[in-house]
Length: 563
Image 1 (cartoon, helix red, strand yellow):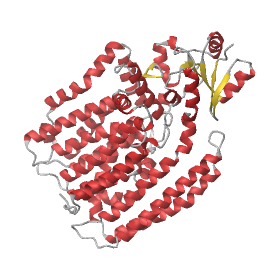
Image 2: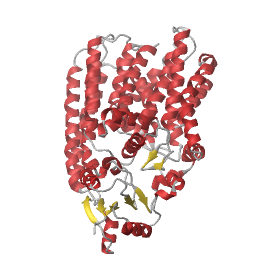
Image 3: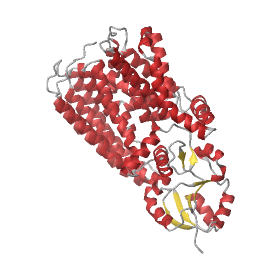
Image 4: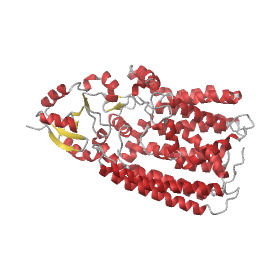
């Protein structure tokens, strides 16, 4: 389809060794960091509660109904807990698996739709892009959603190959429809709306109306609804309030209004993509130009046009939203990687020399810039934490510098059209993969404090001495991680936070005011409470009977003194 070298002179053993090396770097650090609020703690706790209660239909968070998102990731995490026990790496395993599978999938798709070299380099780009790598190591919904949307896109690309038999084309389209269903079960209607809108825009731009005849709409819709319908039917039957909250409030009002308090300027995602694809940023424009020269397939289908429409539309869609988070445009990362992967094999040795030298200098700048961290700090995150993190950032940049310089040395070997610059590409990718892994691991100096995990042993020891029905109050705050670490839900006091809907449905499960809680606290024979430090000091000054179990800079855990 283009002038990209089609042959990749790496045998199967070499490819397997690279995949194994990536797997070690990818999966080994999963348990090296504590869970961060709010997403990681929330989704881990939801899965723990699902496993503990045995209710796989009605998701709950902290004991309250929680219908903000569909349950696929909660199901997967609960199964992981059932198979491997409850812990931090187990909470991240599904996310890591989908991120890793996305790397393999983009390599497979690039090799089948374009050529082997494109597939190899696309996999390297995606695996080593900080955006994909880092998001693959946090327990959030967006990596799972992005993988299923990627499978939707890749299956469509694979199904439209002109040399494919009708039965194989139908099979790949069924995979496409099934992947859309899994995307809907991951995060809602975006899993259907975004691919559908992209398809409409693509056909309008490319005039490829014949594509609609090859989508297997009837059988595909049967596959889609067979997968997606059962949970929605069951949860609505058990919870009549589900439909309005999930579809109207969470799917439409969330996008159209600033109710979620996650605003951002229209250019919010520009720096996200710039940093997220930093090691490949300097070839992005050339990559697009190179890809646009690719001709259409004999059947009139244009994979490059579809990927560009996918990328631009999803980027603009979330840029226009009133609710923005860094991870929202993650679904565009795979096609971006594939477009860059088409160009890397044709870069000359001189181009790679400039490319690698620039990033070696950037690594030096990061080493020098890391010392700025030693000047930061506040009451919530003391300066000592920043000083400790600076060491990790410096080490990460130093490793990246060394590996990049190794890439420059490897680049001295002459490239041929057949071999391509695989060695410098792998070296540069490895440099940034290690940089993100080391710096991300070092961030746990902040994560340890925010998670509250060091408090959990003392709290669980105190809970073991109390009756199972002893209440555990969360006073004036929703702590997103401690319920998971102490293996116990908490009764909300005064604030509702994101549990407002669940509390409105089961108001008997919360305490509206501090005065009401004080009365309950005095009447309860046994009780525990999590209290922010400032609120605890106010209550202690008022003489409320409390015995401190443990505390840190952000929260105090107390129990009702026994008379």
